[in-house]
Amino acid sequence: MLRSSPSNYEFLLDNLNREKEQGHLTDEAFNLRVKYYTDEETNTVQRESDPRWAENNLEYDLRTVDWVAEKCVDRVYAQNLYAALCNNEFMKNEVWTILLDKSWSCSWRYAGGIVANIRQEGDYIDWYCTGSNYDPPPSEDLDHLNLDELMRYKESQAYVGEGCITDEIREDLFKLGWIVYAETK
Image (cartoon, rainbow, N blue to C red; front, side, top):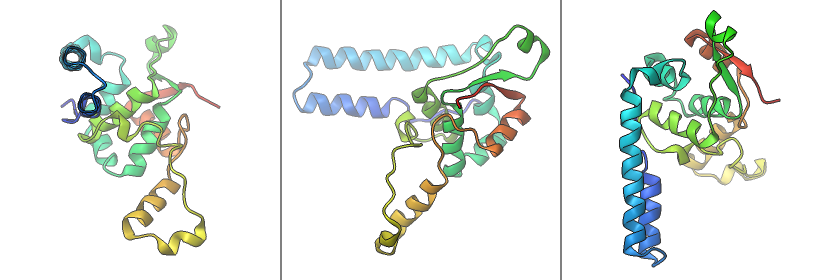
């Protein structure tokens, strides 16, 4: 089963609605942009239903494997996977793929979308820049955090920067049949 988030494009459509409400978009511009995102969603579904899309595609492998989805329930693991997909190239660990030099990579935004799809919740923006967007409070202020803030703080301490591949993620990608081809240093 190819996992997808029911919230794909929700962030973008919410922003469009906000822009329209604030008077920044004409009705025509609003309708054109909504049509663009609706068409893009339709095109994505069509592209993903083509069996050729699944070939040599790390995204397909990640979104269809149960144990990856189970591990991505843990937000730290999901963030670490997102970070690993950013700024790196991967290759199927197969002779012909290696000989033909066929690699796979994606943008930070796309990586966020992959993780949202694996978790079947949210949108790319929930993961985009998570390796660098949390400024933790000084340790002396930790006593003043409520439970949610404290959990977020502790979770963020295990987050890694975009491009970083943890040992666990590297091992899991290898189990899937993928190797790191070109890694950000």
